Length: 519
Image 1 (cartoon, one colour):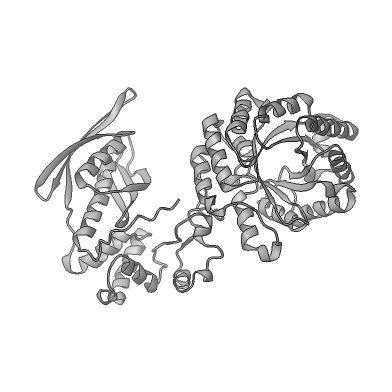
Image 2 (image 1 turned 90 degrees about the horizontal axis):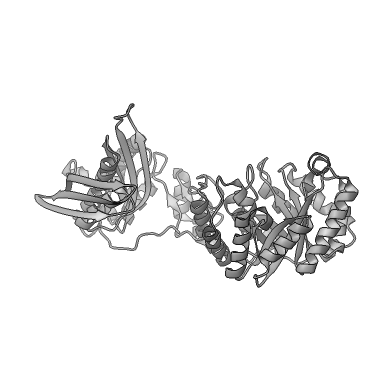
């Protein structure tokens, strides 16, 4: 049996169905181009007959995206098939994917048709699709709840009419892994022409079993997995592409199969889909969550420092990240804290770790997460006491509105010398930070921005917390004001002062290096 597993990406079809609003043609093309770089085998670009917009999207993708097979979805209806064929016609490699519900629940409750009528629809739709396209896929929707004998007849008929791929959907995420694998076994054993087609699976995550069901099906002979980036999709979502691909890569000893996906593009793809679709990825999401390669436990951090394989079954670089992340918290051990201080430029002779670690724990209990700037402050305040600000914001004026280019003017006192600058930006906050940058001259990327109201009422006091990175490290800034822009500017100034203090403490702390770019 062929040991390649075809990766069929349905982010733009099933995945988009979970979004509050449809994606634009341009957004879909951007995602498809990245999927091509990821080297998925098939892109299900949409459901052409569902709307003029979807038809246009599929046609544009078919014209512009090369590499993967471009697939369109069609119900087992002649007009659907014809419309789909027209939409994918410009593609260098194209597929028609037709489907019909086959479970008794769908037959009686939705289609109002008998099994014989449904079987006739299967034959007609696959035969019609083959007239337009050599590559035809058929799906018996809700296969997981379809009567076994009827499912075998449907699969046999679809293959007989020319379907090269037969997809077995667990449409409502109802089956469990052993049960789903048994369906694959049954089809391989009972359908006489099954060897003439690739068996595919499409699993939903209603019971949290999508990835487990799909992998179990692969272990039992399925050779295509339909999945989405970040697992987005109807209801609880679909099988997550990144989980399938990395499970196959990491556990090749057990599964003995492969994909042709470039796993180094996984994180870039995940974040592009996250940003375009406006669907956040939960921090503890497998493979692509922000915590997937972070370590907080002191025992884990100590192990990773000594040998990464102790607590990492795959490397961050294998999915497109530069490195793992060690979170400094009260759970971190002294070895991890000392290692971070050394990475900041302190020599081991300077670090009296026992008293420093006690102070670290006290601060960590109060703050939660400790950042590089906190460590520098702890180290330098041993002898110098509290550290004074180098830059002070004396004046801020912003102008913004629906028909106005956002502009900010700032006046900053730098150790007695006053500087004034103005800048435009995408919004008032962006303009203010750019004006500050012109004076301070630092390179800062704002990675996180969080606003909280810490009092009640219309005149509520707002607190802004920013996290920024620069060549010197990662910094947090906090600013408080009844004005959001003012609070934001003060938080940004907090970061600026922390960078300035780090530079001031000497070359041992300011080692110019490229920022770590988490893709």
